[in-house]
Image (cartoon, rainbow, N blue to C red):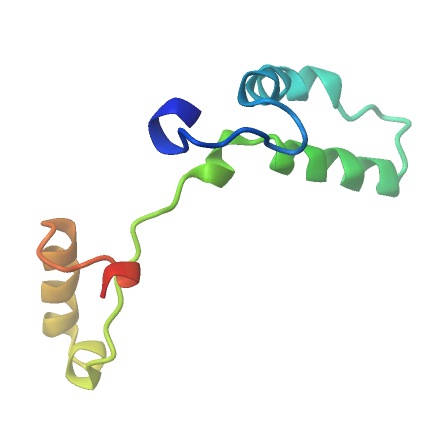
Length: 95
């Protein structure tokens, strides 16, 4: 994942990319919520799961329009969505 999307990353959360991935793959076992954990401990574990989730490094495709006609007319909105799906609209961060 890092070699493909983030090849120049040297540290992630203070760990090398390889060590981070090893920790991320084992985080569920390491942080299993037990019945005796209090709310604060459960929240800490849930936060750690989010931190070590590989999904946090993947940016979703985002499209944007300010065109009032597109936003208020159902058929034009459907056309916008279809053109987005077909790759005819630039990503929001490229526009």
